[in-house]
Image (cartoon, rainbow, N blue to C red):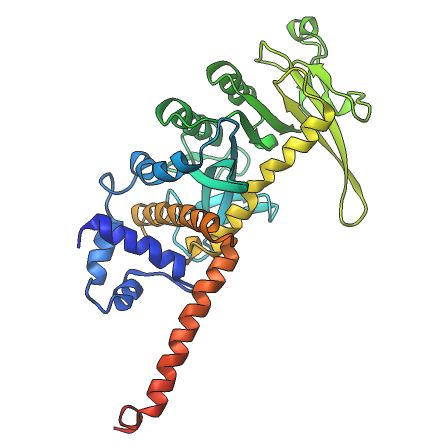
Length: 366
């Protein structure tokens, strides 16, 4: 069996599995026609099967099938906890917004392509990258050695955006992100290099200028101090950008009836308050995909121990996520409903096998 075919089978294995996935487990599933050593060697490959170009070759037919000129690119990152795994350049301590503290695990940056195709919302994992803490330094506060990535998340995001637009020619109209990615470098690339619109959250403590002249004189105020009326959109300027932004403020109500503020910024002149607050919720399409890749595509289920096999398992899990999305188009079932269908099929097969065993006395008592 070729390594390419074996990778296809491994991806299917991730889609049907409901427990830990391993080379031994897949070998047993295949009645040992493929040894666990063959599977391990396949997962240890570097450039022939895995990498940016190889991922695009796999995802390209799916993208070309659904692509739309008004597509949205959404970027976000998530942490997959691996508390019992040995620390390395991939498994390290990363800040978790969910936990509000640093946790041990894998930090993946995800670029999602979101479109409407044949009346359905389609979300494809277009690209991904991993934070790789492959260098060390002394922390100034603790004086302890710590791992760090030579590239920032924002640099990795800009590389993915470049690949999507100029290498793969994926059509899109908007780029959306939360406040973590709302920096001048990202905004400049989207506006000037890609000539696309962006809509991002922005932290209330950001320095802004109310006029271009104020920007030149470095006369800044905090975004939180800007008196924005309900429904108002104001022009602002921020350091290291030579074009204006347009900001609005949304007041939202939490489940406990407390209120919070969300500042949204765009580079598109003429956007109304209603247009901005109606478009921004599209950014949340990436969150269910993160939940699905962890729960349905077996992202967290691999016992792999070295960086190369760990990152290659993640490669397979992201493509498994894409296949779930394409099956969603075909069946009109969401990822979790599809997983339930697969799980019930396996239960029925196990039940039939159990009845055969119970009715065969020779098997039970010989």
